[in-house]
Length: 344
Image 1 (cartoon, rainbow, N blue to C red):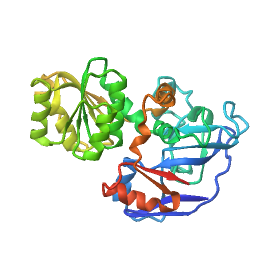
Image 2: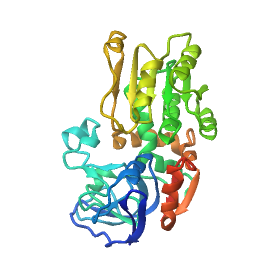
Image 3: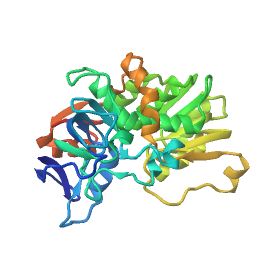
Image 4: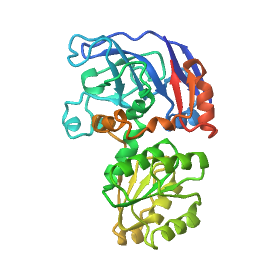
């Protein structure tokens, strides 16, 4: 089959790799119908040292079950399914707590002999626990929206949930990327009254307004903090959803959060030291967040997609064939595309 391999920074190729096969009775083989490029894929794309063992890329996909192992009970050939961005057995103690990202048997796509999601087929370990059946066909116009359940919508929702967003809340979303826009959708679903989106890319923030942002702040740093405080009577917002992962974003989060408020960080962190000093300690700020256990949210969020209440697939602003995926990486890295949809 054809699959996406990263050989070094800026060196991504679509190459022939071995066709996946059932290895364990709990596996399934899935033919990928849609996948996409994630913002977190850009970090290794920009930094991976040259290697003789190229990295299999992609962790967001949906597709059709082609073959099921002998112990798979809930899936059969012909089922349309979506996969969260890590696989899990969904039965261990962590999974039962809704923390499938810590599954004792789970792991990451593209690692340790498991296929990546940017290819034609994938072997899915622990298929009954990992995959969620979709009540649509391969030709459904909702597939791009349903694909966001693999990662981006669930990550935005995780930010809102862990921040404790409730009806009537005030929320600042930092970052106008796909996760930030998904966080806007999620804050609105949870009933936030004021949603301030901090971003400076007009096309993206316009989409954010359509998703539910009540205000947009394009300024950064102290100027941006002052603008948010102006919009909130000088206090800041009760909830801040940090969807970037850079140190400047977390610094800005502390600047715009109200005393006694909560910051949830879901942007994949590209720094180690969090500037949480004594002054912020005295403000009784809560810092939370982390990697989203997407599997815990898929079935909760799917009805909103199926009934058209939310259309998160609008974050995909470019569609490419698998063979052209390198152009998608370049476009996202150069900020020419928000999120690229890939059709194998």
